[in-house]
Every structure is written in structure tokens, then in C-alpha cells.
Length: 449
Image 1: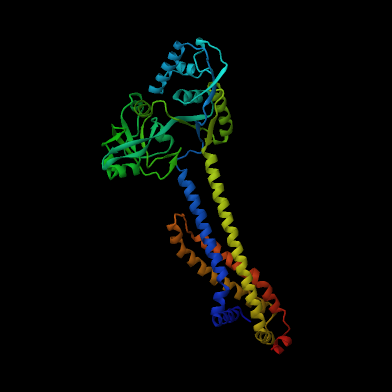
Image 2 (image 1 turned 120 degrees about the horizontal axis):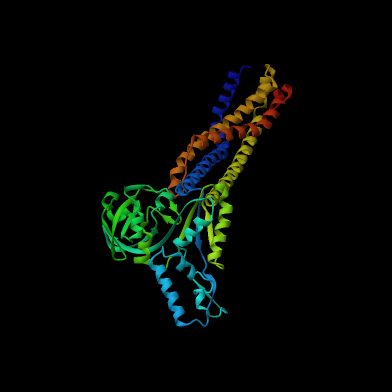
């Protein structure tokens, strides 16, 4: 019997049992749709991770202080000592680039300059505020770093443009190199300069979304005035749309000002800066972190710092996405197994119902191979039909799932994988019934009721 004749037999049997084929393939339909959706969700998750960390350098490390330092204070210090310390703190508040000598006196474990004396029996705690001096110490003492910058954020009331009432926005104090290190691109104007920071200029750069909300459009925002804490700031530039979060800062929604300007006019010393350093070689991140901790321990002996690297963040996000994808794939495999069992049961019934047909085929010269091939092809066709319907179903439900905020990236690869699963399922679960049919004795098959 020729292969085309076998295909005709398969086609006739499927057409004559359309409703049975549809019911049999329900499990396969659900399984195929699940596979396509799982792959789409996985690709969407990967795209989200890639977009989220698009502006992060793989060698970037963020350093922040989460807990106050435990130091010793002079119980018997005189009033002059307190005045000296107060003056030192005031200098640090107004100028982040104050002399390192003054900064080191403040970082003395006792909390006072060493020459003031006094006993050190009483414990006290004080706030640790990282500074430009600390950033310079790290870059000069730790090998393998290419660049470094320091930033902080604060919530401030702003108005201007189309805003009638004040609204709260995130204001980020940054140095001039922040945009370069974060891979931020400008839509209009220029980013903040070193001169802006040194002269404490009241200029700002708006994120794309912030510019649109405040002024209606990015081009209208450029070179306009926006009031931050009731002080006018000139918009010197507008960022291109980023769609990402960098070091906890949503660039599209934020307003960027010079580092020293913010300390002078907005925050004083009430900030929690983050120092960002870039490793020249990502393979040396672990050793760099250890060296950074050693440098900070010399300045702040009892303080605890958090150092997180971008590579670990990206790996953790990707790992979570892979775990979720594997769980969904496992669910899809279970659905496929259930659908395959349904095909097997239907084929067993079909063999019982078609024993006379099998006997006739064998009587006219049909071999075991022909019978086996016919039933396996029927099983594969049922699975393939279910797979095609499942792929169409996945395309139909994708807009619904996307409407719930779930990102899905449909692909031809996902559809082909689903169809491949269907064919394998039909072959595996259809083999045994087909093998049983091929083993029927012609005389017994012809004599069956």
C-alpha cells in the first residue's frame, strides 16, 4: 500500500469523526496555547529585565550606608569642643567638596577632633553621610576602577509650566558625569556641568515624562523656569525617554540638579548619598567590593555599608524570570500528558471499533507496518490539529493578558515549539494503540462483532 493511500485513509477517518477529533484534541489545544504563552511570557520577562537594566553598566556598584555609626563621645568635652564640631558639620553641609582634613576630623571615632581630649566611656550614635571625599578616597585607594560618581535624591514640591498647584517630584542631586555613567541621552540641551556644581547654579535637567507633565511637551520645557521649593531653576536640558530605573531613580520622572546646589538650597546635610563606582573588569568585582569595605572601615570603623553590584541584580532578576518560566513549562507539560492520555484512550476505543477494517486491510495485503503507520499518523494529525487551534487560541488571549499588565512577546519560535510538542505527544501516546492494532490476527479481526 502506497503512502498516499494511507494518507487518504487517515483523512477519511478524521473527517468522519470530526466531533470526536475535536473533543480528543482539547487537552492538546490547551497545552499548545500554554506553551506559546509561556514562551511569550518568558521573552517578555527577559525584555523587561533587559530594559530595566539597560542603563546599568555590568561593572557598576552602588555604595550606601544603611545604619548610623556607633562611636564614642567625650562625656567631659568642653563647650569649645562642641563649637568646633558644629562648625565642621556646617562646612560639610554647605560644601560637599570641603577639605579632606576637615572631613577626617569629623570622622574621628570619638566624634570630636582628637586634640579636644575628654574620656570615651559613653557610647553615642550619629548619622553617616557619604561625601565626595569618600568617593575620592575609594577611587584613589582601590585599584581596578574606571569611574565613580555620587548622587542623592529628595522629594520636593515644584510648580511651573502648566502646573497650577504644587506637586511632589523626585529631585536628584548629581555630578556632571552621572549622565555618561548611566548612559542617559539628551533630547534637548546639555546635562549639568562641573561649573554648575562648583558655582551652585540653579539649573536643572528634566526627565522626559516630567517635562511633558509640567510643560505639556519636552520642547516647551527647554530653557523655561521651574520652581523647586519656591526657587526658580532654569531648565538647561531634557532627557530622551529612558523607560528604566537607574540606582533607584526613575530618569523619566525625575528632576536633576547640581549636587552642591541641592545641598545648599534644598537638603543641607539631611541626605543619604549613593556612591556609584565602575569596575574596569567585571571579573574583579568581588575583590573590589572587599577593598572598598576596607577603605570605608578606616574612615568609619563601626559603620555598616551596603554594596550592591549591577551584575548580581541582573542575574537575580533573570533567575527569577527563569524560575517562573520553568514552572509554567512544567504546567504545560502536565497538560500535554493529560491530552496525550486522552488521545491514547480514544485510539484504544478506535481500535476496538475498527477491528473489522483492520482485518480487511490485512486480508488484502496490508502489513503490520501499514497498520502501525496509519494509526500513528491519525494520532499525530489529531495532535497537530489541536496544536494549530492552540496556537490560534494563544494569539487570541494574548491581548487579554497584556491588558492585565503582563508583558508577552509572541514569536514564531514559540509556535513551532508548541507544534513540535504536539507531534511528539501524538507519536508517543499513539504508538501503543497503533502497535496493538498492527498485532491483530486477520482471521480474528474479520470474525469480530
